[in-house]
Length: 244
Image 1 (tube, helix red, strand yellow):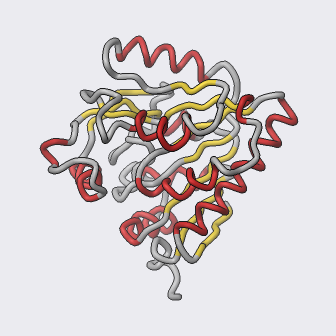
Image 2 (tube, one colour):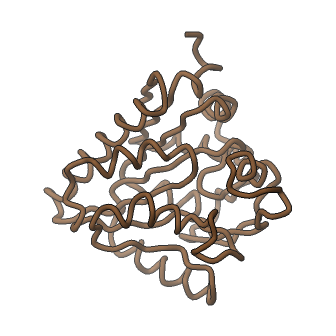
């Protein structure tokens, strides 16, 4: 596990983007293509801003989406597909973007995504950590046992309040209660994981992730079992680990 602590989220994003770009370039050089998973949320803003500026052969990169709320269209301001189209997929010419579509046949879409993601190994997972320690929408107690690629999950109160606090919804009653999420097991199949976790609101989650034993009550603790985990923090998110 490699941990990098930046002064702020902007510096963090630049560093994380450079590592992601280098891994994409290495994968393309080795395999003729690269495959990656991307996270969303306010904590990923700076990383995407930096990543789209990197000199990467995007036309050879296949991108998988981590999760999406059930019950909102892609046009909804809080849609993670909208987020990714606006901040990433529309700005770089990726080979293909596999979105988690929830408007109609969710079971069928899960089957299709599973087929696609399992065709070849995924080179990079860009994985955030929620205030409740979730990865993707695998809220505690997360299912560590399933070997499905994507599942329908219930969102806990802390997760839903995070969406309100970040300004995506006016109140917790407006936040959907269910989502489609890539599973913890599938995330762990990525060859390398780059986890970008800035901001003071993530300090408890970072502390718990790095100090507790593996537990599905803090799903991000599972990341510590990955052989190529690269965690990017800033001074705020690392403030309960180190006194600056």
